[in-house]
Amino acid sequence: MNSNLIVVYNTLKNLCEKNKKNKFRYYTNNNVYNSKFLFFNNILLDKRISENPYKNILFNYLSKAERYIPGGSYILSEMFIDIINSNNGINKKRITGKKLETFNNLIKQFVLEEKNRNLIFNVLNFSGADASILCSPTKNSELEVKKNKQPKININLHEDFRGIYFSNQKTTTKDFISVSMDAYIERESEINEVFEYAKKENLPIVLFCRGISDSAVRNIKSILLMNNIKLYPYIIKFDNNDPFLLGDISKALGAKILSVETGGSFNKNLVENSSINKLRLSSNFIEIFNPEELLLKEINKKISGTSDRELLVYLNKRKKRISPNIVEVKIPEKDIRLINEFKSIIKYYNNAAISGFTIYNDMLYPRNVITSLEKLAISMKENFQKIGYVVKIKENDK
Image 1: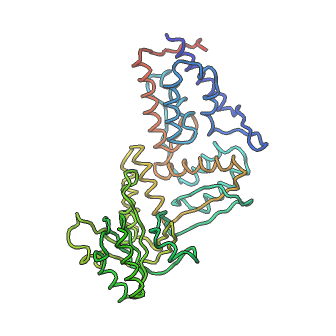
Image 2: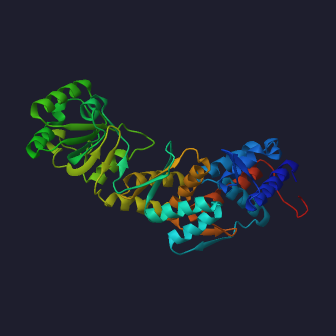
Image 3: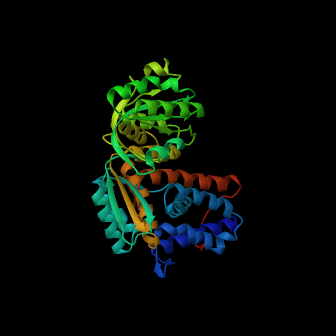
């Protein structure tokens, strides 16, 4: 039996017991409070762990658990202890019921101050079970809650057009001809067809593409001036971390992406692949009124059909940006505790909305989180075994 590994086990067990009994205290802005979301801090500060030769392996696993969910290091630590003790995995129970009602019970476990708990309850009830909730600090002294029925997507207007359209106003809202091109526009002639269509319909154009050459920008400006039409070009460069952004915008608009792969000529197919949409535009975002629902259904289907953690994170990101029910919560920046608790609870909320709930060690958790962390706990035990240490904890090893 390896003494250093026994220290890891016993320390985790001791810290978990203290956390369960709310024994840890934190000090912020002259306030003393406890939080189950900050368990990892206690591990980092514990000398029994920081001076242990296996600290790097342990920190690697626990930090990964925190990336899954705030407080994930606590759940993983409990699972690691249970798996070592039983060798049969963990005991968990799947539950059913109204998600929002069940989630309120989950909040009671994690948000210990009644004032903050009631505030979070009220925001969730106001938002509804299908809402995407965004939380951020504000310099204002009062909490702000705003519900937005239009998906808001952060993308940038081409810099040469920002001063033309948004020097005297922040946004513009109207019907637009929406055109999506998975292409870099070298010549203005590639989009001549849509200029003629815009002039005929007396509507402005919003264009989504990969980029525009300097010469094309100059010539496009001349065409717009001569024909008294407007074009708002948003540049969406390809990003390996977000490869579906252009496609998601296009599907939400009901427009088809035109690219070399789709065949045909840009100049002959732009109009038939375009759509007309009511939009709110800014220099750095667009809002879509009445987005197409098909994309949201496709993403929800993919979410329910995968357990891959990284894929789920990306699918949720895509879902959030095209969701027609977005609630923005802005909390005074001085209230750090509420900001941290709210951001943490939102992550629990989003996961539970996807997968439902599981009871583990008499605590409610999102089911997909427990599934992922159980796999991580098993890997953690196996990794210790691979380096030559098999842990067997006896009742008197304390």
